[in-house]
Image 1 (cartoon, helix red, strand yellow):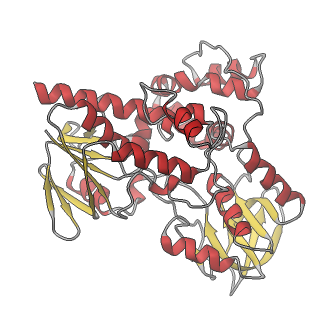
Image 2: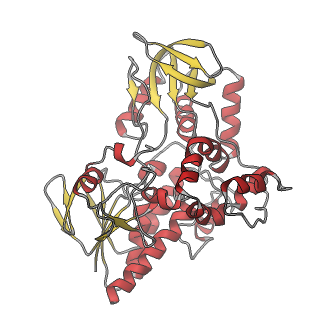
Image 3: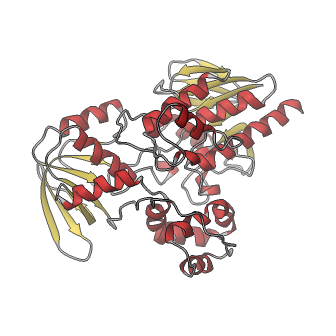
Length: 423
């Protein structure tokens, strides 16, 4: 069985590894447009300050070997099961896992699918029996036009160089967004020698919450199916809020699938920002550095909206009233993943949508897939031999952006492909 996987971050790399391990007589090919395998945006950083947001005990690449990464961490002398390991070391771990699998690696940009043949930008064609889309998170756009140099993708080679250049400036630097990406960029600027002020702006000005030290075990809960009842149940739990949030982890996908379309839209419109900062927390050492930067006036976090200006002048319309003017040297896009699949600037995704081989999910946040991760076409039927994993399937599963969830998905897909190959 010829299995071709597009995207070589965690989702794609482990889809390839699991397929190579599980599918009889598999020929697995992994494609990545940057030519960086087992990295993706999340683990491409070389900065030791960029830590995993999950303790080592929760970051095994394999669903069936939950302590696989923790053992690697201990053997490498990086700490123990409760250590928040630098993301660059997690990349080394994934590289080793991928190197141990029979997977062919092809650098190149996938631009189209013709029948079951993948077409690359250089004209190369790769036939498949199963084509798996594993593009991960696609970068979002800046919400306003700013008349200063902007870094649209802080993880690209050009973006990293631009951030290093901004670190040499004396004026303020604008960080558009206040989530996980902003935290990374702020630390990158400081580590590169930036001595000025960073101004981080988002509509609500919410910062990711820190993990607890030591961690409380998840609370026990039998969550109700209705969204309002669920919120009340969590509020009424006699447990630390982190334990309450973590108690939902095993149930989140089922809860999401039990919500009506209207309830999902309400969640995205009103609750998602609060969910994100409480669910996707940062390592305590990172939180302490961010808190110190704020206390020293090096980082200012504002809730509001951007208004463009001339030259380096921008204005923030502050939530609750009033405006704040700033003179900035440049701006970095820290808005995080693109929230609408139709706006994703990826040639393959656009071709699949335009050709009807794929369609957006009902919320428009990912691709429509069935319970077996088969991509649904414009006609409402699964497209033969086309699958998706990872964040592309968040409309169906919601909680499918982190390793602890994706590892189960890619394992199950590999097992399904093995059954198909034997049929």
